[in-house]
Length: 308
Ligand code: CP
Image 1 (cartoon, rainbow, N blue to C red):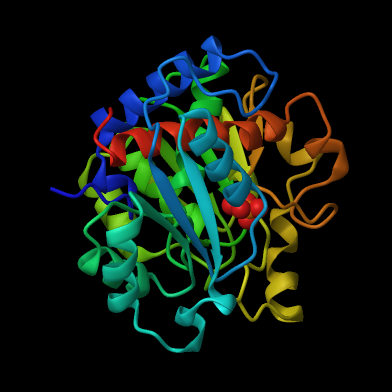
Image 2: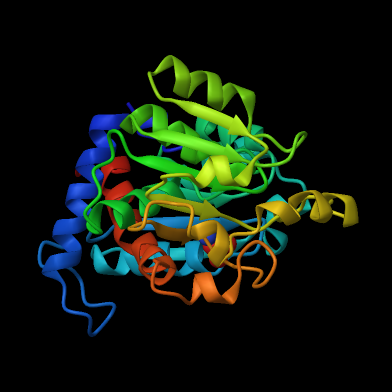
């Protein structure tokens, strides 16, 4: 069966744990330079990943490209606007054609239904590089960052502050898969997707919604936020004003566990959702988190292509 990675549930908790272990091992085995030197086993030699971008990206684009190089394969970038997809060729026909020429497809798009359609017609794995609904690759990197700082996932207390966006949805999905608690601190009307919350709770995770930022972070070992207005969302003054009490600043971080780490998937809007003092401070793990996009993406690719 083709292994698509549209959500964390496509892999499941045991596989995510295996991905994290593989990422830790591969990261430890590498020297930092030269960056594109293939891993000793080059497990994806001869494999090609097509990357379709219908939205901007820095980390996802570079980490998938470098992941393929380090695994011994290669990647090609398709900016949707310069392909026939951008001129109306159907998603289904694009899936059929790419399946004849490449080994896997990564897509960053808006409507989640589009990636589901692509996966339905593709004969090669399709990987979710972000949709308006979810961002599972980001969360594998976040979990890797948490684990390598010595925290165990089961029983972990994670606080999310601000907009209940696609990253929040995938974080909640991860809570269900890996059995940790998530407290969402955000304004009414900006909650994460109800389906993800129900699914995580049904899997035994505690998911708490609160409008009190202090309650969200109290005792948390991980404090996470993201831009208040995601790509392609309308935003506006009312939206930004509603988010203001959820800014992650030093006073809020002081209410978390003293060992708490700060995560942000980036790009950050400094002095909006997070202050410079926090993102540049000793509790911030955002640069490790960004680097871990590369190491975790390698594990996602290996799993999707049946090598893990
Ligand atoms: N965090 C993240 O997905 O970064 P990019 O938008 O730069 O890919």
